[in-house]
Amino acid sequence: MKRLLLTGAAGGLGSAMRGRLKGLAEIVRVSDIVDLGPVADHEEAVVCDLGDHSAVDRLVAGCDGIIHLGGISVEDKFSKIMNANLLGLYNLYEAARANGMPRILFASSNHTIGFYRQDEYLDHEAPLRPDGLYGVSKCFGEALARMYFEKFGQETALVRIGSCMEKPKSHRMLSTWMSYDDFLSMIECVFRAPRLGCPVIWGCSNNDTRWWDNSHVSYLGWHPRDNAERFRGEIDEAMPKPRPDDPIAIYQGGPFVNDPIFPED
Ligand SMILES: NC(=O)C1=CN([C@@H]2O[C@H](COP(=O)(O)OP(=O)(O)OC[C@H]3O[C@@H](n4cnc5c(N)ncnc54)[C@H](O)[C@@H]3O)[C@@H](O)[C@H]2O)C=CC1
Ligand SMILES: O=C(O)[C@H]1OC(=O)[C@H](O)[C@@H](O)[C@@H]1O
Image (cartoon, rainbow, N blue to C red):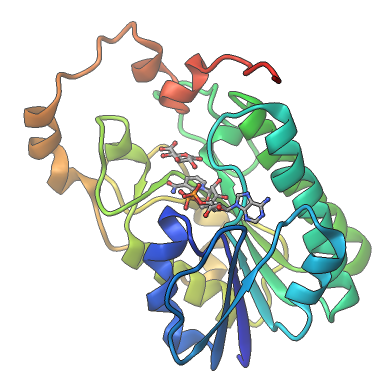
């Protein structure tokens, strides 16, 4: 691919993935609302608010693929979520429609289904059960992407990321963790597949205690290799196991189920 757009490139996951995308495209266009730091030879940097329609149109122009990580990534005031995750998504899909419909990988979240219990095993057809306004915004993103697929043929991978970070940080994340290497191999599969469609993909590694079934996307050939189980001893030593009646230990969304609705100023 000639030019791949990475939004949210200054964030936690964006900064971790940024350097790993070099082999995927000749140019990686990295974007965020904040400064992007030093720019490598194969990169071009664009500072842009996802809520700005014409700026997003310029951002997407000339791109052959989009990894969309930008947005509010935890529970927050609705006004903040609305700009980045609702208006921002609409702007991104309209820009894609106007610019040749590049394939999109959308960073959705396990918080679309956070109110399922940890003893339930889900497939992609499980009805949505978001655990907060942030989760609702990811449900919106998935629905918007689906509509652009049905109406216009725009392809998107709806990646319900569990916990993508260097290593799991809690007992819950022994189930939800996805390693950076596994995310990278998923990205490669998504952009190399001859046909993608608009599937939900559960974003977790090959964890012994995972809760999600990806068999419906076996056609993508993604085989996550890491397993959070190797961190169990470390987690057991670092923190007590939550009590079984603690919502953190009951619900797939973990601590997010306890978040309040944050008031506007
Ligand atoms: N890291 C994880 O385990 C998970 C991440 N995700 C999703 O993956 C994406 C990346 O996650 P993280 O890197 O952890 O989050 P993060 O909060 O570190 O990064 C998000 C980036 O989006 C940028 N951003 C926020 N509002 C913006 C706007 N209006 N215009 C342009 N950029 C804006 C922020 O400046 C930030 O750099 C997010 O969409 C998040 O919802 C979903 C599930 C789990
Ligand atoms: O559930 C989780 O662990 C993750 O889910 C998310 O959607 C968040 O963006 C991330 O900050 C959390 O760590």
